[in-house]
Image (cartoon, rainbow, N blue to C red; front, side, top):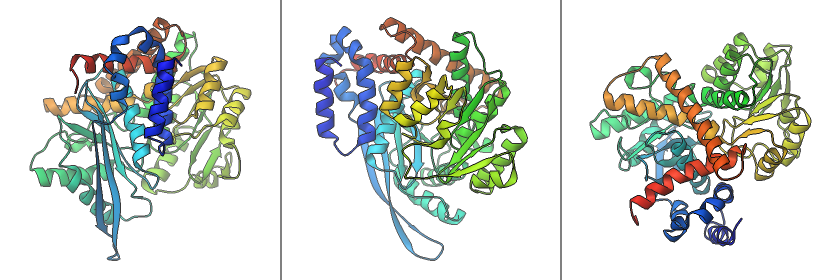
Length: 453
């Protein structure tokens, strides 16, 4: 990095010392964009980067709720409104015990660039709570969501901030929150995305992140004269993103042999076909069961429980051609990356947000494999959320085919933007630099045009 970039990172570390994920996300962008800042001194003079790393607004609040047994609980709620230079804040809500301000700042910062890449007018934000919906009854989840939205509704709106789902926030949670927003505000607006189809939701939205990730990977393969046909693929996770990543890989001729949850992973050398995928969806979406039950049902699969004492995840040591990390941040470390490269992986497309550690990213980029960072490859989810916002504003609903066509077109556009930016700034084929630079330039130009705000 240049001297300016090094000094900048030193200042950011001093100010945000307890937020490792946020620092990791900022460092990646700064490393990619240092050449841009050298070429465009007007961005440095206007302190664009210094302003980008500071949220425009952070909201933190208590969320009291009552369990079925009458016990009172208190959780902490957040909304980080990071940047609105190109549109209203847009980004998910995460309900998970690991949620804290640093993680949400990292996610909101990533969201700014991801949303910029989609070509749609959306700023970046993120929010959530340290509430854990696992093991809670529907009534308990409803009471929590209503309490959470009672405060959040003061700060959001269709032209201000439009949250969506994320880890721990699916259709059930979105429904409860939307109902409470409508009750308190007495208005039916597109304030949340990921809604049910009967009340303002968009077709393809549940599938969008997984589908979009595979569409982006297909573009990377096509750029090298290749396709998914006959490719063996690794997928981590078993939630929404993982499920629809598996489905679209099957559509395009590939085979998926792994899936996981926090308890461990399954390896099915026979492949997760459509019947097995249907069972996996029922297991995780309806029964809310564990991935180990897949191995109990299908003798072709083996289950490996999570072992925290290991310095690697054995899932990433399974031989394959392509990998789709779709679980959570930093799930791939340096040892995992080494195992993947040694076992034939030549394409990594991130379905999760920042699932690869800096050391893993360095290994992928240095080796020259096709590596797509999450801000580019998993942008399909928020892109389709943007399409849902458009449909809500126009009071109409597009067909499944129309939304899917628009989604694929957006992912093709994101791929081309990454390729063009990487070429323009001297690192052809580097999708990390391409995604960061393309996302940064659009937001930076908008901030410059809007003055010192």
